[in-house]
Image (cartoon, rainbow, N blue to C red; front, side, top):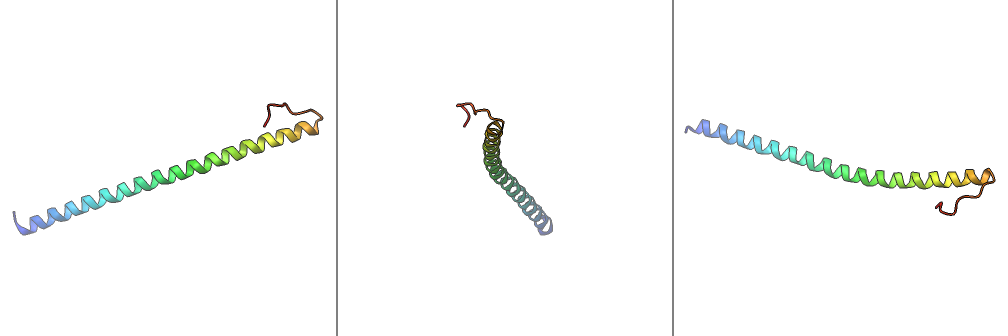
Length: 72
């Protein structure tokens, strides 16, 4: 094998490994970001549910009805 051909193969191998490393890093970052996004959306949904329940209780009081005892 000539030195030129060996250098080309080594260069292509390095390029391949660098590309695989870059793509793996992108995948890991997306997975981490999705986990953080899921946590934020879970908290947001819980807050939205609490707000909706509170507004429903206020509306029931304004109409003169008593809220059901099982309402939070």
